[in-house]
Image 1 (cartoon, helix red, strand yellow):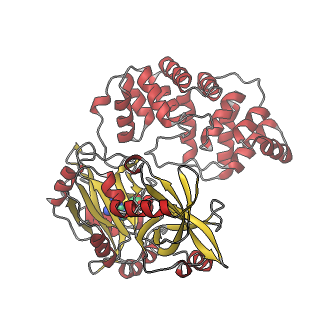
Image 2: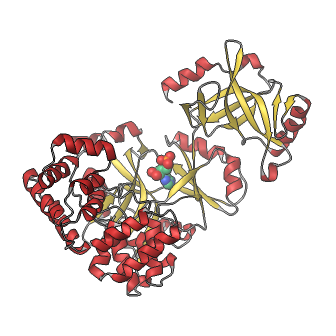
Image 3: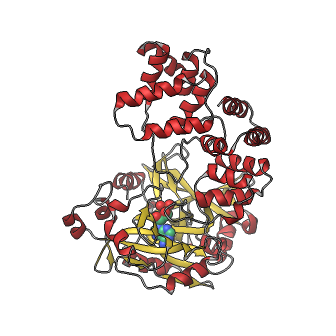
Length: 534
Ligand code: AMP
């Protein structure tokens, strides 16, 4: 572990990514496979690989007891050093004697950590932990403790470890990233990279991979601006994300945190067993009855339980709405375009409890609002829109998937300031700062730059140029005459605006030519919405 600790020190001491990669790749090249497997994982701040569900269950109290035992320091002394440094690893380095000779390798440390997993007796756990720490030098103990507490704090991202593996073993960085994503195991990835075996890596059943995420869209306009080609529109279900692995002998459901939650939803997992082909599906678990989604508040009663009672399962049945497939019949599908994955899903028969989430392909500009209303009618919370040609990007919140949630409420506000836009909107006044009223004054609450048509923006530009109070160049204070209705996705207290609130994803629903400034919403209304938290 001496080289490991020295490498960690070097990485912590530099902000240069290149230097970090050089130190890491040099280190990886010097060590044997077993150590490489353990060390690469340790360097991501974990004792075990990402896909591995084992936990050490070693907290501050066990570590504190072990350190006390070894160093003879008092509770107060440990506490004081801890307060001083706020990092248990650093505390250990300071307390432990420097007489120990480095003897354990990363692989041996891993074996000892694995030994801690099954121990439920606290005294026994502390004893073994103490033995492990005793066998380490202060600097080594520092990093082992940091790793045990899942916080290396040396300024090292997993992506940098991947790059270092690529450099060390002369492999394409992309191949390393893909293998790590598929395996959820950077240690194994490193060993495969060393032996030139990255090309054969495919997804594996019962090894969950990170979920693809969506970027928020504020309006129909934003969606059409974002997608250049056809996209799928589907309901955004209000449930919990799930990854269903179906194998020949068993099936399992994993949550967004990659924890196995099969026991919480036995009916889904059971139902999946009747499928003939091996598959990994992405979808949403929803409370479900009579072909209808039930409110999230009901699903909540099914969460966090070890195993639901029969009566709870009767009262609140669940279903799995499938919207993607990542692996089927031995084929990894994440690089195939979404329309191919959808076609595959569409061609399959599903047992009760597993349903294909309906989707629609949009290949020209059509109003999306009606879909929104339909989704709402089905008690879903909005729409998901996904580029038809997009691969599945695990763990990424990119622009290939967008989520468009329902507005919580709308506010009528008055425009107080306007600004020239960007890109296509460079020459027009398209960004509007707006205010609510409070005891005879106007208080700004937000800024929106989407929702109006090009024609409306042109008209507004001409109007605001005529009604400018003060011209600051890019920004103009304008006469507060124009009332707009804005939708938003949330409300939060903020010092950014005079009103003391800020809106999340505000967008203009329409210009309210039928309203005057005296008709706009007041700060009191905003406070009410905040209290309702709707
Ligand atoms: P949010 O939680 O607001 O970031 O929205 C993203 C979440 O919406 C995902 O993680 C899923 O749990 C959920 N979701 C519901 N319906 C879909 C769908 N059709 N496609 C993808 N995600 C969905």
